[in-house]
Image 1 (cartoon, rainbow, N blue to C red):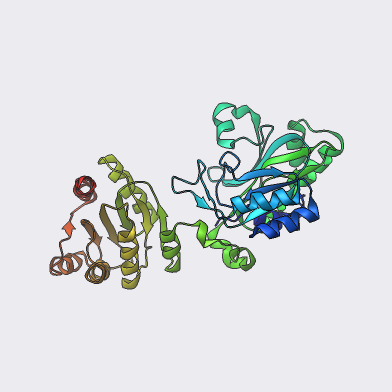
Image 2: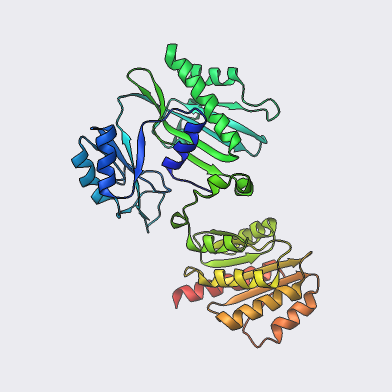
Length: 390
């Protein structure tokens, strides 16, 4: 789950991470009120789940409360376009009004879980304010890493090592060490999957603050953090992903034209691979899970065909725990209620497969059966391309 910058800063502040003075505003008059209190020089920052806001006009520096109100009037309600929003952009509903600070240096600190190392990794770079992916690609030697032993935790010498490599000294060095340790404490305590400060600001007085903040959280841990779960902004998420989450379905929107419904993440990956190998691209990742019910299949079907980018669909089910006849009944029930809006290829295998195939055949609906994954992909790709042309 993702949250807004202002929410991330609220969380980090509780764990001792130093942040600029600021408050969130949903109206121009509120922006003016905040600017009068912490200004006169303030920064207005659009709160959307996307990077590159500055280049898109989503970050503005103003020098008075009156100007803050005027610029807020322009920003709140605007559609912000950045390299991360996609062509549809993001609607700005609120802005963060924050004190403007004198900047000497911009650094980077981030924490993620390294799946290969099976451990968190704390990263730091002197190249703050730049996309870390670009730094990693062009100058990887400027990214310093400290891996965390989960049993021992993140230790003081590791934070000092990173601060030293960033070229910091004196009081700024001490502040940076405390900052990095506090950031890791917040990361661990909240079950975050990402905690990123870009840029990490060094002021002219040598103070260390989080000028920007980004946090993502492990969805599976959210029941332990109801206060974080309440921060979820459904307006920032794909509507179909939101709908899928209501039924505990794993759905991720992709860029292709072939809809996929499978049971199990491994089968989902294999299905997407074979679709690409056959000459097309998947439109989504939709995993109904191993113990799927007939009702869940119906809900998944409805979500699948609701995507306007889906020109043909592939339902690929392996009946291990789940029975193929149960899946077939769910598909038929949904198709009769909703309609077959796109050509649909169905491949069933496993428990009660013959009964499942019989249910589909006797339904009177125009499904395209397939005996294996290769045949299924070779059928669905031409159907999707044909629908694209028509």
